[in-house]
Image (tube, rainbow, N blue to C red; front, side, top):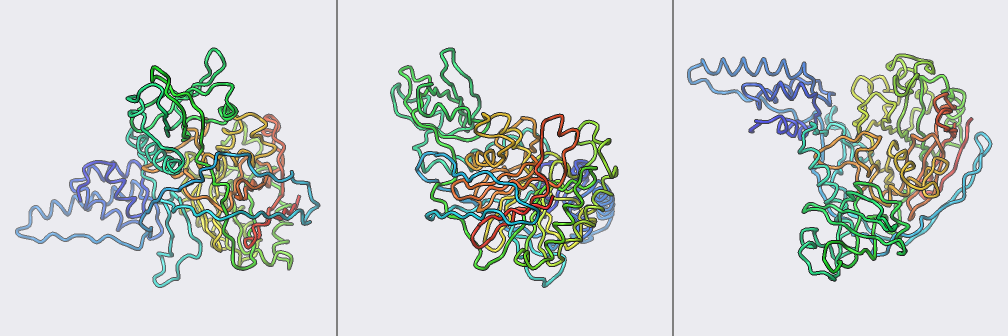
Length: 555
């Protein structure tokens, strides 16, 4: 197994289910025999480890180099090869297939009336929608985790798609950036190719003026011309090409929805000099309007919450107690799942002067307290949680799940901890869980009537339309380059669950139920300074057999 470069070591570790500290990769790459050192490091790692540390690597290199020196002095001594454990982590082989979207053009999102504020623990409106069937393709990063720590244990009943935990391979090298954008283009262009007769930009450049053309590319630039038209520059794997959308076209209203780096398709006509495309139609990857979600085959419910923010002086402990107590009542008997979309704790140093608003100043003490609150909910609930931007994980997305130390702290009811984003399939219903930092970017870039904090589900609709949870690269949010783009929405989810903006919003977009579940933290001084009035103490409850939504309020 040749391991001449750090990148190869990273890939080999990822294949075995491990992430690694940068120093650990450097140490393994510098070993006399990198392959033997890597085997030794994996063998020495604790059974529950997901990441190799520099300490693991240093010890392994010392043993491997010592063994190599001893072998060199022994006459005709056989070389003993260390075996590689296979029970550290289990991942299914990646498969991929491209979606074939509907040939219809994007339309106005399906909408529900705004939510009225219910009384505490009271039931509000219940909604459902029907639609014809359209089959979607498989997700290339799909994998199912089994309990690898107990031989003979039954497989985990919850299927996970797109979780980067234990699979991060990014080293920050130039090739990582190339890989993530190439993967984004390949996945999203595959969803658009059934809609247009695509030609690469290099081929379009050789076509005669006046020819009909269709192109698929990432948005490289959007600018207005002197006379009010729009020039959109598209980029694919062969080059870039300018496209002109005139202000009198019906599609001109879609230009203000474009974000840099998202993937779109255009159809139009080449100018006489073949230097630009006059665009007649603009297509997004989108969710097919005929999409029909899957449902459970029995009556079972899931509670969706996010942004608990334990450790803040404004954490609504009384509302949490009421919620936890209600979960023990007969009224909540059908609730078997609790899905938490990030920000379990307030964190430390997340925003200016945050220390003045903390009730618990130590990050680990915050998680200890959160675990105590988690113990209040029924012990037979299956809990799934992802991290958010206030949690003690890397800020760059995709975010791996919590490390082992934090997992051990938050062990109440044995929660399932996955990365952000991840698609969790429960009772046959796929739920895309994403904390939602990119919603800030979408709301800032799009007109207020198309995306706002008061209606966060509108911004979620645009992410579904673009089939990517964070399409704009290099904005305010941090994105980590990986070998593949874990942020692409390859398969249409049945439910889309976010948090982050501390506002309640819900509705259906092409039959995909979209829910932003509010928060459990009252308005902080920082939120006052940025004019955020949070929706506190809500717990949206989904009937997984019908996808009807019931709102409960506990504050």
